[in-house]
Length: 239
Length: 362
Image (cartoon, rainbow over all chains, first blue to last red; front, side, top):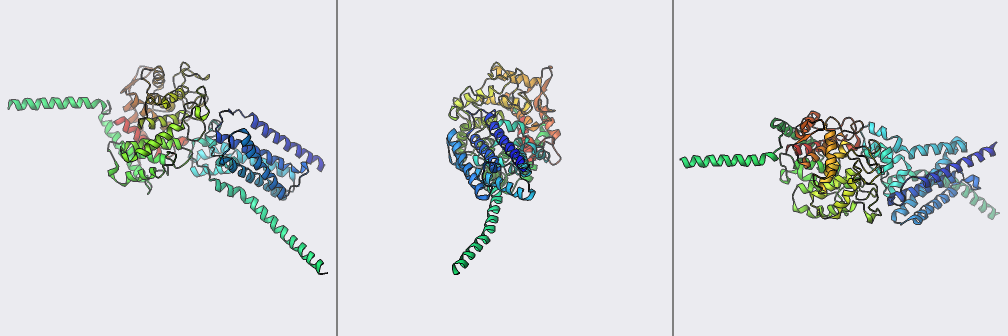
């Protein structure tokens, strides 16, 4: 039963990952005339989504789901972002910022998933919950736009809604005002209200916090073990 | 004695003739009582703005809103200028504090075109040579925002010749018209290719298939937000943008008898109203419509407009009556129906209405 559930989870995550990639490839934008900043942000977004989905499914590939593995996968995703940008057009300083942003987001989601699993004690439920919440957050500028409008377009509220979406982080790093692109302008009221993107530093701090906490907790848990080990080695030497 | 009387009579006739010469430009045909009330409304609007001004001279912490409010003061019947005190000089300092290395004038990356364009018009209205360098750089910045071959867009692309918010994304007619107003104010060479490219984009935003090569183009002569898109659905023409399109064509040096201008004017005649922003949803952008209405009618230069039912309208009277009826007791204006396009910001809307009334009563 457990094995069947694991297989189902692996399959579902693989399908979602495939759909994300397929959606990215099939997006009806004019690639040739795509704004440089849009290209950067979209590529980083595609890598982040697929890397995280792959990481959520890591056990199926025989990978451990511990912190070092998560950080390694996040680093690989960062490299993949820069490589994808390089492969599809000119590269500039923003590309490296986006690489770093990809690392932060993938690591953050991975840590969040581990934390959720610790609470719910159910991998499938945790993965589905996190995918659902993340999707809602990514789409926040779409579905929360009318709420902001009902508050007479309060600028600070609009900025908070933008901050909720992980895609805003990549957009800020790419200097990409995605709310004013044709598609968003047509589908989200936010682009016609007064708003200001949160700063890259603020968002970096926001997404780094869970990662830093996880690293801190891991160091705390390994230190007594290391101390114990060194004490026992010392005792063995004395004997 | 007789000679003196004769001279006196001649002098009186000469003065009368001189007044006749001046009067057509003197709020052409606007009722004198209404004109007085409109000027009083301007005073009340400016009084409201004085009360809302921040200590640093700005309004709404925005270079754009500050520039529009400043323009309202400068172009008012009071004839304010830099010698009138801190309420004029501080906003200028605020605007100058947001001049960027690339020539733009903006506190944010998101609205660099709008902010720079309105700041340019306000600074130009000051007629102070001290700002010439800033204006030259801003003009270069605005021209550089235009999408052309250097940005990878060939003339057959729908974006070609357009100007957007200031990032590297899609252009729209509203941004283009604002930029063109600033380029016109700073006397950009009429032979500059910027105008020619802009005309391609403007024509592609008009529902007139004879001059618009886009498949979606209709034939009512009105304008939509950008080629292939209107915020009111599909590619329908609407008031705010049709007036913006008409001004843009005039700014680009198109003759009043050009069929594109005539088609736009016919749309305005067929949809003449000040009760709503014709063609819009829920009166979104109503005050944008009022602003472009006053600008385009003033630029078109006719005192009266005959709608398609044959009714003759004195647009100045209609405009002033409507705007006065919407003024709030504190002297401000605001769009209470929709905050879209910042119309929930009373400083911005008051500044715009003051500018509109200044144009109507001029």
